[in-house]
Amino acid sequence: MTPLMNIQTDKINSLMLPLTGFGNVGGQSVNLVDEAKAAELGEALKQGDVSGCIEKYGTEYAVG
Image (cartoon, rainbow, N blue to C red; front, top):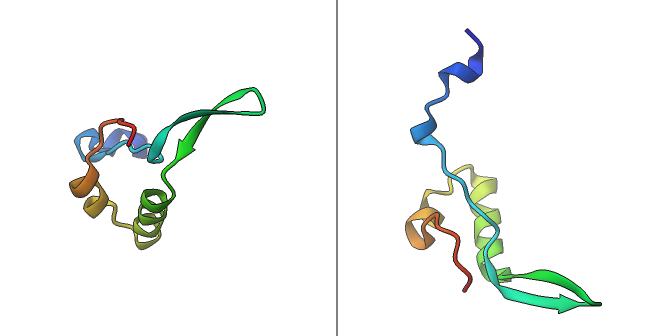
């Protein structure tokens, strides 16, 4: 049995970098990052616990 077979998938959360919307820079479509929420998520990742961000913002993809 490989170690990956022991992963409890119900304990995994998928998160995206928070966005404020979409834009155009130099003729290219871009995602506009919500800098404040991204910093908050970054700090949570550094601390090894994103549960507060999940509780506050959820895990669904939504702009804004």
